[in-house]
Image (cartoon, rainbow, N blue to C red; front, side):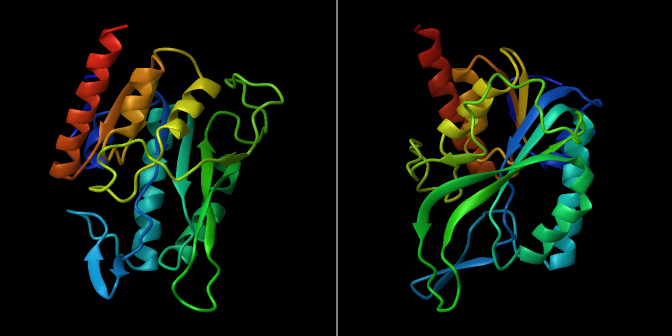
Length: 240
């Protein structure tokens, strides 16, 4: 496969062409099965060209298949960012149980609290980053880690995205998150794959941290935005 490229297709199509253990890391945030947003009484889809409104069983089976494929193609670890919400609570807890022997650790990403509009529901102040791995998952130690006593399992960030396309894509990860993981794990020229590439945040981080990247994005709109964003950073990098 061609490296340093985003493929405009399903991630399962991309991974079907990948050999076993052919990439070094995965960093991604899948759709949360949030269903439909209801802002000011107007329901709208959060993702274009993707329903994100599955039954518990369908969402669970979809994510199990995805994670199994990610583990197949990955040498080291899969960093999987997800928030437990009403639409994915049962599926999320089942995923933890299903992959309990292949979870190396779990990190908490603390964010600015977003008040819940419904009474009796806890407001959300954090998300999970589950680290799936077939690389000694029974051990707490990361033998590929570039840290010693100075990297916490609690990450704190602002909600600022530093992404000019954040108004077009509402589920964007701040750029400092993938950059942090690339500094803390592995080495230059490692290949990082994002199966839900969105506007190319993982790819941009890879460019800035001298890593290689692969991505899959099913939305034509987000794919076009990611190419524009990546080309801007490639041009800036060549100036130095």
